[in-house]
Length: 467
Image (cartoon, rainbow, N blue to C red; front, top):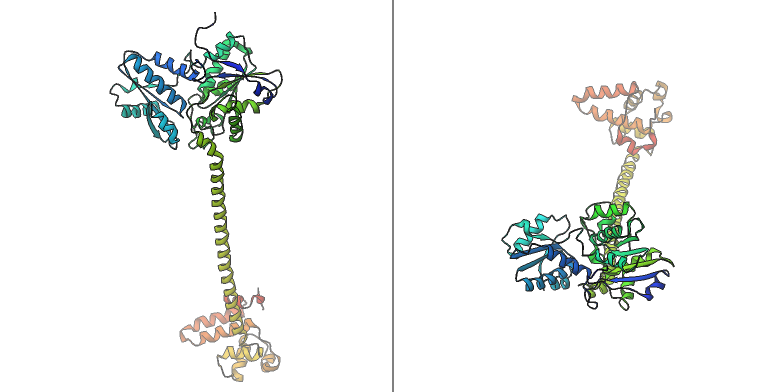
């Protein structure tokens, strides 16, 4: 016998059939405002209110919401409060940065608490916030959460309705935020159709944790379908199990795909961006002639339509700002690099100039005549030298006697010999350096003399040795 429950309108939309590969496309309208039907979310929330202990004089519900479920629960709680005379409060937790328009709408029927949702918020934390917000004086354990899996009579009713009406689609498309709707539909589809159930396709955005390996995403990012952005979901393991067994699959669509369907649907079957995701997924899925697809339209909840229209403009501005920042950083880096290179190059040029000056100054001491210069360096005299001093210098270098006797015409003194003679002379000026002078002469005679880095800086052509 067919169910007597309020039913969800399920109807064919011819405009979508040709757009979605020729498949038969039906929409399950979950809007609360369409005709006399109550939306699926409303029925889920009414069921939650019914299962709450009626003996309490003050009941508090708390949940994390992006808008729709928080507003719906708040409105249902307000109606239930009028019927029962009991105080029923709803505390909606929203992420920092939530649109002011959404927060204002939620505040009409609930307490709104804006907070950082960049971490897993425990039920204990939610209860503490709810208690402080409402002034609830009972035990915290009696503050109720909202999401409850396997709550029959809520989302699952639409699947039973399809079966009762003799409808067995090949695909069912649902938008995916936290994953509750997907798990309810998939579980009931298995109960109703067994192994021959339709493919349950959950469609979401890349900013949703269900399509990531991580169990928690601190900053998932932004999407035009803002209610599907989700950094943590307690349904993840259940969703993964349905996917592993082939009951369900997840499909990701981009902001442009969502916006295109959102604008197209508004003239046919109104849906906010987070609901239009399911339609965008059906369009991109690759449906073909002979397929029958049912798309769950979660409808036109509370959302900031102006923000939706600004999304791509703001996204472009964010990109331009980012590009500008990167470009500025690149120009700054290039400028610093060029400045650093210029300074380095100036330093190198200065060093080269200093070396050239030193070489010129040193070369000027012996370039006029190598023998004459060598003797001047050995004697340390600026006004020439004596024959005896010249012969002593010649012999000190170990040159043959006959060469030394005719030093002026025949001997050739190299820069290394001149440098050595200069060191010997400098040490001879200090009586206390006699021992060092003798060691220096011995090093020349036994072939271990090393002039040092300064000499080779002046005469790199002398490497490794002129002896």
